[in-house]
Amino acid sequence: MMSNLIDLMSELEAEILQLRMLLREVAIPELCSYFHVPLVTKEEQDSIIEFGYSKIEVTTLTGHEALQRSLEALTDFYVPDSSFSRRFVTKHPGLIVVSGAKFEISAQVKRVNSAKLAFKAGVLALSETALEKWKEVHDRFMHLITTTVYRSIYCFDENVHRINFNWVSRPRVSNLTKTELLEKIENGIFTVPPSHSMESWKAVLAADKSLIERQTNDTFTIRRRIKLRPEASIRLEDANSAIGYSAGLPYIVFNRPGYFTPLESFDASKKQNRTRKEDSLQLLIKRMNLYADSNSSKGKS
Image (cartoon, rainbow, N blue to C red; front, side, top):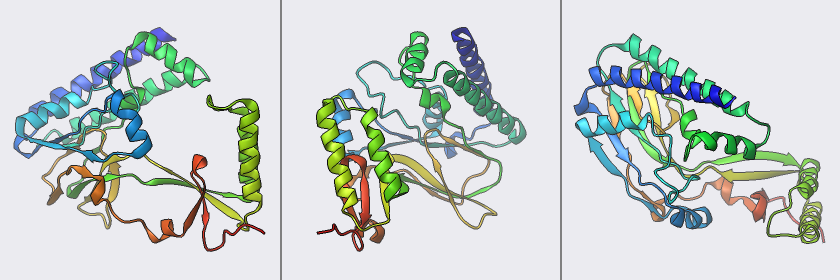
């Protein structure tokens, strides 16, 4: 199985090499952009996990330097060394504008993305447990970040009207009934955190159940925020609306966008205000990111 995984990586690297050669031949360097986002060190990691980013300094590159960094990004699958975070992996927001060879490049991007899916399937087939998969993969690929291998390359065959880069941290929302929530809490008995004994963990869950049972709500909301990441809102020339795309890798387009907003540095002190929906929610259990509508969530006396 491991030799198969090595073969799959070799096939992926060969497909990416072919794509890089094609892009280098027909790219228009003066229209290319690359936005350098600094790596996160392990020393910075814990603070970001607890408090979030305060600032991210973005460096804008253009011309041949932007094209070169964009091409290198396509094979950036590893952390440089063990001093860097594996949880906050490098993002490569950028734009490669090319002239000609649309069919060849589009087809090659599809082959690269298919090879990525094949490698991912090979990793998933290694074991049913995440730890075993991690061990087997890293026995062969030191410092590999599998999620960077899995990233799709976005290539837009249609003319692009607008590209607006931005920073986003959207919540992943799931709604649960009271019955479903109580069942979820009960199932937590099987995953005791390292900071708890079985008895102390049972006490936490019992307190959580008691809190939920006192609520008058029929439904509850779990809002886990996705890590802050660069994205772009992209509208094609014939589209009625824009669609958001992750900017983990540079985009490939075949025309100069009519409107283009570069990625700016992030400053937490300037982030947007909370939405009305968020303001109406009452945090019940921080550990679970569990909320209830404050207009209807009132404990029974």
